[in-house]
Image 1 (cartoon, rainbow over the protein chains, first blue to last red):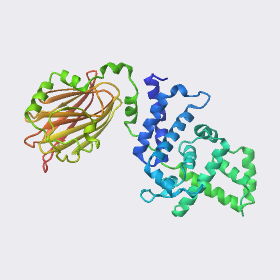
Image 2: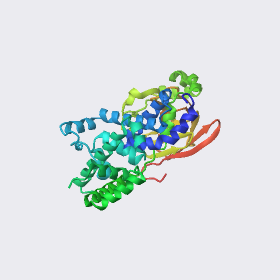
Image 3: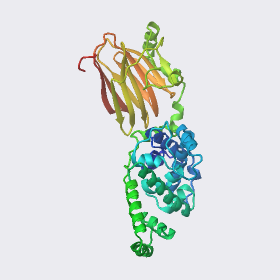
Image 4: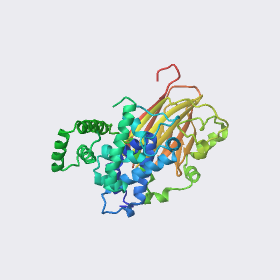
Length: 166
Length: 257
């Protein structure tokens, strides 16, 4: 497909919305999500020859999307602040950084859990992936998918309860 | 009382729609004897529903164009050239050059937030003379274009006698933009290009033509000495066919457009 603009455009039309939604839910910022979505598709175009057809195509795109979103978070100062605040808290929920303005409700609660948990929750509930599809997208065992989903939801529940929202 | 981990796993599998009929039957039997398990199931079901109901967002309308504009186009390689060479090849540039030599533009690229916060480092082409910065007001009129062949934003601003039309556009292929106005007291006053190379522009009385191909950010400067009401027609053409036609309007403060 590399070099075939029409085929790539069709792929873009098909996947831009889920990739944008995934990035938005990972980053909770429309501009960052737009930039990450652009980066994802440019990487897809550049690396089409590395796609392994034994895996589902969307799993490959979602993997790039999640990796790029996590890289973006790592690069951003707000994530550094979050990590600094939660450095000694093991697997507990991430805390809101003092200078970060987070909204209320589910979107804010999602941003307060670690990105590894947020990623499985987004793949499951935003993109509608099955356990095996999440496993492929994140390159982790299915058992880990289940445990991260369980832990992630528990943490989310705790955050919502603390906010009096659930 | 702690819930058996096997029940917890089955509850999660049930909520995720990944439970076999046999396991679902077994879970139902287990939950019948466990109020804690039923409570957990209800709680997780509610949370899961809330997550499923997060709104499905639309990607920005021009995202596809922006991405496609960054994909290499083999046929476009030959068209990319030095900006000034392309610019001075335009016959009507003499008009711009003559005007620029005889006047000083007191315009600011820096303070125009539509143009760029990176200001001059982004400017890849310029016609006219910049002497000093003057504040550029907020957009008088902003319009969004979302067509299959061209998309993005156009913003009209003013600064004293200057009218500034900012173009932030992406196109699927070559698009000619013709800006025309009937008021003969309005002059073409300058043109700036940001970020991208390979522009072409020509100007004649009451009519300025620009070409875009891919992602382009242009600023077009018009001199409106009498602070008169001005309508600028913008016509977008692909292969000679009009694909989009619109108008931006400047009205003196306190006057209807």
